[in-house]
Length: 234
Image (cartoon, rainbow, N blue to C red; front, side, top):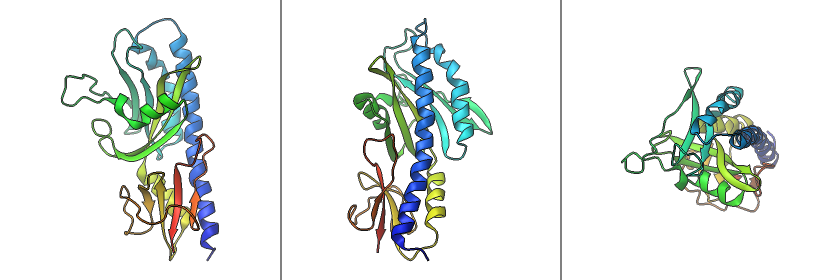
């Protein structure tokens, strides 16, 4: 059996490489959105031409990426106060997912209050958020990768992708293998993303030490600092 430190490093690399492919795809989506927004017209229908780009992402990363799209800053379009252009694979086909964007509705989906939207818009940097329950959206526990869409140097929208918790867990467990040690994949705030032990359920708070020996960051080049760590409770 390989030493646990070696296994943690290889597992972190595998997870990081998987996430880097997502962020690379989001860079393409953000660039395409910038080009579309620069073209004449102030209607939200402009974003429908992003469909082929999103289709390439969700089919190319099938299993990991559940859905993807773009959310714009309110007031950007003349025919919508806010707009969330989002698609998902349903039965093998790319389907536009409507969201309730009416502030007066009890089911109002206010994406502008979501961390995956707020952070990249404010920082101008990519972000990895979750796991969280996307109430009013996917209505399930997900992780969202996102990055800002820029016009000149101003962030005017956010390109994002919802990631499958099951796929992340599979990558984690496949690379970790069978171990005696209890290992958890945790976020920067200590929330468990995946683990090989019933002691650390996904979505709960990891109560052990988050740094020091037995803690390995998941490297993602696009992120300013590691958002996830692997932690072994020896």
